[in-house]
Length: 591
Image 1 (cartoon, helix red, strand yellow):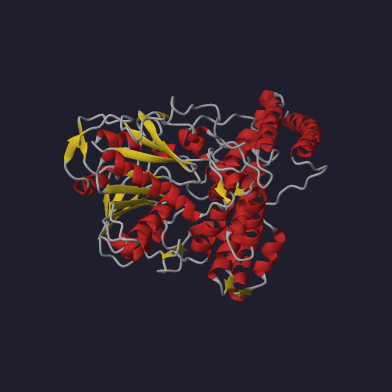
Image 2 (cartoon, rainbow, N blue to C red):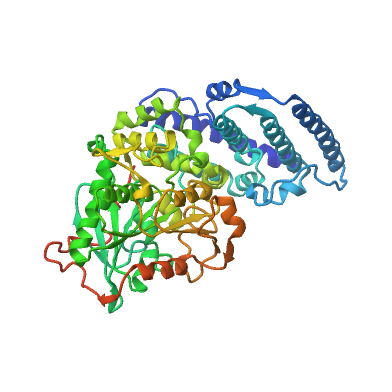
């Protein structure tokens, strides 16, 4: 019976492979304008080999690890033989806690699958140990080697293969191979939608949400627009509001509605409910016509242009400003620029998961080196922009098992459709990065770390010095952030001269920020305002249950002045309503 099932699985796979290869060539020929294609390797082997040549080997450690590996392999063979004979044996090695790839019971109950899993884990451990025995003079090279090794190990997982994944084999039998046909359709669809530079796997149903109906529903009006932004002003829900308004600069490589998801998760809606007058920038999704627009253009046409409008609408002299991630880096640059010109309109600055000092960029840094820059710049110059979907894939590969391979298995091997999920819908809705701004940003941040050095970055002849930022500052980072490591973000508190408050939220880059008061899952930590480094700060910090939002409100309210009568949005003569939020710019999708 078992042999018959295996034979049936193989027949389905054989039929699938023949049709798949024909369709793959058709799609590649049509969409990429080539006759044949070579699969993209998870790691550039030539580059990897070149990195290894700079290493010294700790021979003693390597030999010790190899001997341990051989002993465990022998024990695994013995256990496998006993298991085949019906004996109960304990595993030689087990997956790490939180590794959900092997959750199916067959990985532990079936002698065959148990052997496959343990052999994979042992080989993975051996590869990692080999890398650990290598010594590199350049820490950045060491990080690259570890990253590439991890990518290879996770790509080679038996869970990613049809024949060695018990869940997939069951699906083949139960659906009579229909899952493979559906998976092929899913793969072809993703291939056709993906940019030439990189393959993108669908993470959620792209038709599951409609902006203005399911997401980005907080009532407001677009009150200003230029080539770069639409400025949204939200309608007050309280009779009175704080005198000093809030102006938010989200990342310009993403859409603003991460801050305005559904009603429960919307930070914008919550701020409005607390009595704040809230404005937010909605960035354009740039095309090739923006190729020559640089970081300075984004600064002038983004937060500074919006600041001018907010001040004129509200008739105030001071505005509280907020930035997230790249938007926070841009905002800090703008505030330093304004202060250098004796412009004092910024009342306070809040930075959410933002780097100002790029000496600890995390794994994002492994993509960037002097050697890789010509290739990266060429990709941007050819289109006039760096494709936002390629950036999205790069960020996903920092958490490859959760954000890439799990969907690879679900969508293509099991033939399932991904479930609707608002955070992943937003994550799959990126914006492009104009070529000039992209190259300027990378060189001044990740490559040369110029922003932290006073005067190393100049815009319009003005040297950017973060010490000029003498306003109260609130820094929010997240504990498991794979894009902006919190230790690197903490260094920003040392670069500004204004009083700085640092708060650490649980979870990662998105969920740690979007952690609502009602039903929020993650705690936050509050520590000393004077700690010289991140580890000292964390050692002294106190854990607080629940969302960080109330702490921010307690900090922000005293910065926001007295309560004044709320204005009706869109009634200002100079800035009448152009259209309802969320506006046109945010609805332009790539692909």
